[in-house]
Length: 490
Image 1 (spheres, rainbow, N blue to C red):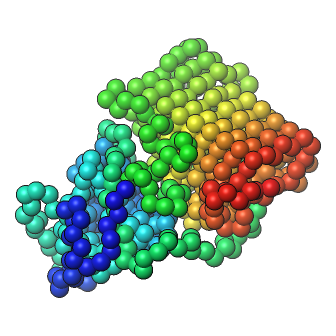
Image 2 (cartoon, rainbow, N blue to C red):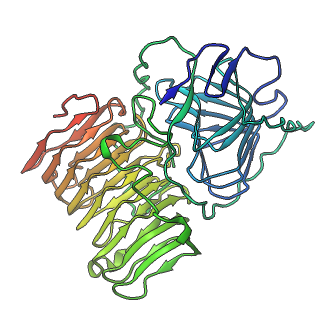
Image 3 (tube, one colour):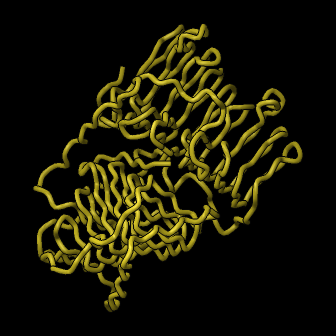
């Protein structure tokens, strides 16, 4: 990947970093900003105006405009345009990255940036030949940045500043998102100006003030959001990298957007039913055996994206969920998949729920990517959560909990019943106060037993307190677990 050298008046691949100009860049001084948490945009034509966003903005819809807005973030990507999305404009705005060792500014192309001031980022602007960007009169830590197409486009008219305090434009309710494309290649990154040399180690964060061993939400109604991409070096492509073959955008989620048809919530109607090629705003409820859900994108507006009702859990089995994308849009106390019944989930892309998946008994999760969890204040967000169960396999997944925050990539505890016969193997894990919990919660069900944890990789220093928190019961197997820097995790 070609990275631009960070010096004034350097020209490479059509990009010029020029001496700073006097023209105002960033949020105009007379704009009053309204505080906001992180935003996931799924409604085409959304306008985000006059906000101070503490968190990321994920753009999953066409023709989105961000103007007169400040984004403050310390995760992986501050403002991210997803593959296949077009028409994104960001202007008269500011991006402040909280961790220069890992936080990027505006990524990964297919955007126009006008008068955008980016500070403190690992890479200020990222784009590629297949996902280009137009950057006009913008700035990366004090250095002017202009990336113009051939021939140069005329500068757009600056957004006028109203005389009074502006009201932020309301974001419309989420709706189906646009066509997804394969990951672009050969990205260009404009990094933050800094001394030459190796990237700094991740900045340590203050440990959370809450109990480092929190109880997960026991109510079977979980929640959406966030933003990881744990690769210690600039990625080889502008999407979260496929680290040593782990899942990413290229091999999870919907396989063919062109087949998707709009739909509301639905419930299975017969044994053996195949539910496929739908873009659903709502949820899927499964009440029959051997149902297959395939090539479906769900914008979940309730507690669960997919569920077998608790009352039917003992009578419904054989559910397979594959090559689908689940996006939480309902707020707190949500999860992509409910913990009831017997099911297999594979090649899924799950994001923006408070908990990615809740598991119970007789369930398998494999080759899936759980990321960008919803982390409202006081939340205990988990990639995968269990409060008791048996016969669960978690294999070959990429599971990203909140970076150095509450609570985990995987948390398995005996709150509501014994934990027995869980296999966790060949996963890439990151985030959390502790990244992996396997705990006896003191409710009389004992410590987890018959547990196998093998061949897993932890993203180094992605946790607040440590990689694991465990209470070992009988018959544990723990082999070949290590960080991505090679340190053994015992």
